[in-house]
Image 1: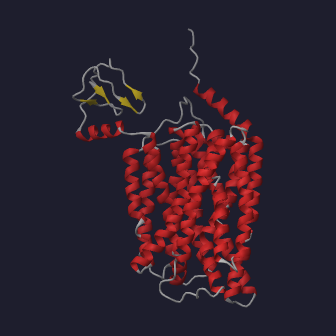
Image 2 (image 1 turned 45 degrees about the vertical axis):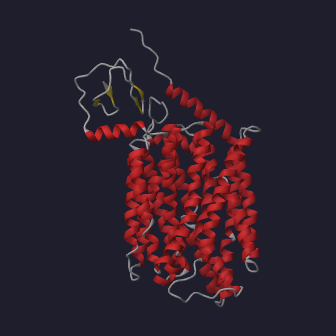
Image 3 (image 1 turned 30 degrees about the vertical axis):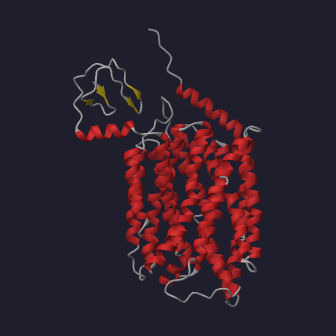
Length: 496
């Protein structure tokens, strides 16, 4: 007789069989219990699926979901010029589209962080994916008289996607430890640039194939529903460490506020978010304007605008994301042999190097598009180097039962100070500069470039925050280990 994790008896098992569940294996000498009941056919199928679960498969499915999460986010950016012409909005108006998305994303993140530390995480993830998939599909049918409704739909998509970004890394953090966790988190965060790049490519390709940009929003929802179903069926709900006690939400927040490594790394993530948010929205449009200035292209007056720059930028983002995450993981593992502060130091050096090449983009773009792409390639590679490492820093200095809350508030902070405002701010500065002087193709190009020059300075500031993280990293990691040992210690026996 065998017992599965939901408390039902599985018929047809011998008395000496051993059943392995998510929490361990049942003793072969387990005797029949009158409370047990024969498994129904559906429960037998579920039991079979549970036995086939593996942490690697779960990490793969979660990484696939993360690809779709970011692909959906940047599919809209891939057809941004078409959306701007269709709805007839200015640069600041089109920047508002991404800003509303990020604002709703960051406001919802702490809520999902609280829920993720206390309830079934994979159910929350699946519901979030189903929600944003349905909203994205519905938004493709909004007519040009209702731009405000299209903006609102992106805000709702942000709420759905925040559930995924806040909770999914914590599942991987509980499934793996040490270097294996670093590797799996690297794979997971590789999905950010990969998904972002595929978003540009998908949006541009679907628009060209269908002859209508609305079809760019009708592919990722189907894949999202598939990913949500896979998470429900194949991803386990791992234990949050082996902790016997749980702290309150207020206690968690106080502890995170006192965690200097967590605070400084969150501020550094904000700088990364500011730059990537601005680049993701404006760089393809900036390069399109550069080609008009160089007289290698004309201002778009057609129903369907050229998507070459979005396709190239998307491909570069995919490749640089892969290189950045792989190089970052390998460099960190190598540097850990030299210093225990390797994680924040590698992030700091990569940020400072990235700022140099991003500055060069705006110097060479007027004369050479190829040169601009080379600078984008190197700058993005260095910028993407720190994504997985930042997540690993959090896992080192925060105990398991408050990791979802920590990830959520780090996401909230990085979006609040980063890409929640950067697309709109860059568009606003660009519009202001255009209004100050006579509008021409050259000045539209230069005004956007001057606005984007704010990004390298923010990136340098982020590098400084990573250096500050390095100062406190070892102390905060030791504190987290001591607290974890205290919380996992079995209660002492009491003599009567």
